[in-house]
Structures are given as structure tokens and as C-alpha cells.
Amino acid sequence: MGTPPLGRRDAPAKFSPDANGQRVLEVVDFNASKSTAAKEIYRQFVAMAKSAHLMRTGKTVRRPRIGILTSASSDPFDAVDFYLGAFQQAGARAQWLPLDAAVRASFGKDCGAIAAARTALTGATDSAEIYPDLAQTQRKLCLDRSQLGKSLADLDGLFFNGGDQSLTKAAWFDGAQPIAEFTALQARVKARTLAIGGTSAGTAVMSQDAMITNGTSTVALKRGAKAQPPPPLDCTRKNSCPKGLVEDDLTYEASGGLGLFTLGILDTHFAARERQGRLAQLLIDSGTRFGFGVDETTALIVAEADGSVHLRAMGAGSVWIFDAKGVKDAAALAEQARLLKPGEVIRWPN
Image 1 (cartoon, one colour):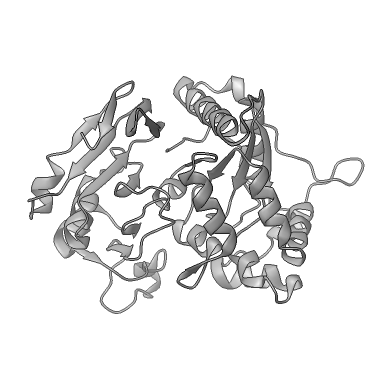
Image 2 (image 1 turned 180 degrees about the horizontal axis):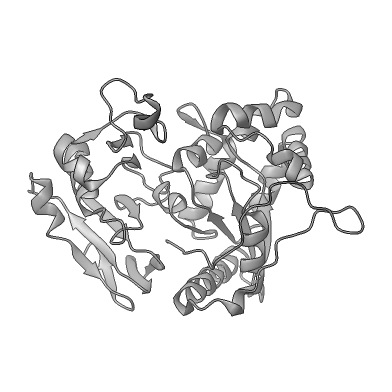
């Protein structure tokens, strides 16, 4: 599922207290959004969470509980208020899941060093001072890891934010091994008792096969895909690109992402950023058959019905489906995509 932002203000530059000394929260007005497609997608995810609750408990629920994971952001606190407000106004009981790579790396270690761990991972330096309440929530999770499993057990849906998909994977994996809480999460997704969704990096990280981490179509078609970490942002100007890489190289994680989407590789912002070439090249170079490119303000809905998997597109754009079977030229494959348009449903494999 790919979901667009509804529009929001810039992040604060410093801590902003109210008259009682509490942090001033970001205000979200869901209904004021001019994007009908965006609002429909958020409501669709709430409906999917309701279905998951029914599957899990045998009971209907008016407002399902949806967890918000902001681990893809270099500053995981920045988008918390926005997503909580958006999903609450879309009909859910929303709560923040305060897990990210810095918290995961601090489990069993120094929980007072989460900010330092985040700086080492992402370069973020002052988010804890701007959002002291959220920083304290993360520290409490670090001190009592059992909260993570308890929170996940109560959720009907879990939504992953955009940013850097590698950071989200690092939140759930200790090196090459998934943490125990993620294994439990996988089981619930498989049992259809937990709905999952995400936007941008939160979609790309779902891939079971190779996970895209960087690149443009133009460079990908010239230089191919490279199974190595992405180059640093703006590395050309800073003269810091690793040997053998250029700033816009197509890189990927060969071990895949979280593996919650099992049909192929996911890519996002698809038509708007002309990513057809990079996805096609990655399919060929990684030996993966299927790829799915999700346009902006568009969602790919994956559901099981009648003993088969159904794929449906909704929103303002389309979902591009690539089948690399028997194709060896990426440029040719990029021209052969099937467009799944809004409202269209197919059984998979079709």
C-alpha cells in the first residue's frame, strides 16, 4: 500500500511549550485536505484494520487500533503528531510505536544513549530536545522491551512511514536476524489478523525479494544494479561517494526488506519520478520475476479472497506490474508494464 501525505507544516526548530509547559502538538485537519484520493486511502486502511480485528477476535470494532511506525525518518519524532491525527480523524484509535533502529540497538544496553545512537545512524542531533515527551517514551520502551510485544499484540493495523527503508529494516533486524517481536508480527500478517501498510520507504521495505535503496532510471540502465549499500546523500558534491559508486547508482539489499510482501519487488513515486527503468533493471540483475511500481497518491491493496490473492489499485494513479520472465533487456522490460488502474482487481497470479 502506498499512501500520500495530506499536507503538513515544517518541523519545529525548537521545543515549543504551551501554558502548562507541555509540548504544542501539530494540528491535523483531515477533512480540509483537497485530495479526495488520499483521504479514501487512509479510510481504506482503517477498514482493513477492522477486518483484521474481526479475523483476530471474531468481533466487530468501530474504531480499530492502528500503530504508527516512524522508524524510516532520520528524525522519528517529526511525523508522529501528523500520522496520529490523520488516522484518528480517518476513524481509528491511533498510537505511536516508538521503535526505531536506535532503540533496537540500545535494547539491553545504555538506554540513556539512544540519542547518541541515532546521531551515529542518521546524523540527527537535537530531536530529543524538541520532542522530550517522545524521547521519554522511547526510553521507557528501551528499559522495558516487553512493551513492544504487548503493543503489537493489541494492534489491528500497523502503518510504516516514509524516509529510508534501510532504517526501518534495521529497527526489526539485528544484523541479518529478525528480532523476536518481528517474527510474531510476521505470523499475524500471514494469519490476516494484522493489516499492514506504508508510504514511500514504508512500501519499499515490505519487499521479500531484493529491496531498492537508491538510484535513477537513467543511471540504472547505463550501469546496472549493485548489491551494496547506497552512496551517501549528495556524495558527488562532497566528494564522498564510495569507490565504484556514483550518487545516482541503483543499489539494493539482496536479502530483501521485511518480506511482508511476497509477490516481488516494490517501488514507489513511480511515474512521477520515472522509475520504470530502475525497477526493470533491478528485476533482471537480481533474478526476480515480478515488480510493482506504485504511483503517488495511489495504493496497491493486497487481500485474500476465494482461496486466492487479489490485487486492487485505488487512488489517483496506477500500479505498474512488470513480469521479467524471458526478458533480458531492461529497457524493453520497462516498456512492457501492465497498468493496474484504480478500481481494477486481478487475481494473482493472473
